[in-house]
Length: 107
Image (cartoon, rainbow, N blue to C red; front, side, top):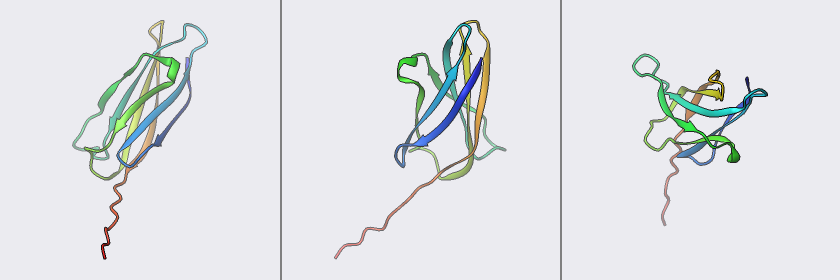
């Protein structure tokens, strides 16, 4: 089993989608699990975000960043499980959450 490709893209400033392309030529992929770690590596742990069991729309998870502070150095880790119980993982490191505030100018 292998994770063919893993990538992350931000859809809006406060909400993103993690998408994984996973492949298993033997029994097939059963599920993909998603974890997040904030940039505070000394005082926090990995947070399990959830599992995707439905591959027809791609292996993905919506990630809401609205409650998280701006930061640089976070990470996603993905576990892909096949139907035989085997798993493999892949990480995406040094990720940032930016907050962009534009001034309101009134005349």
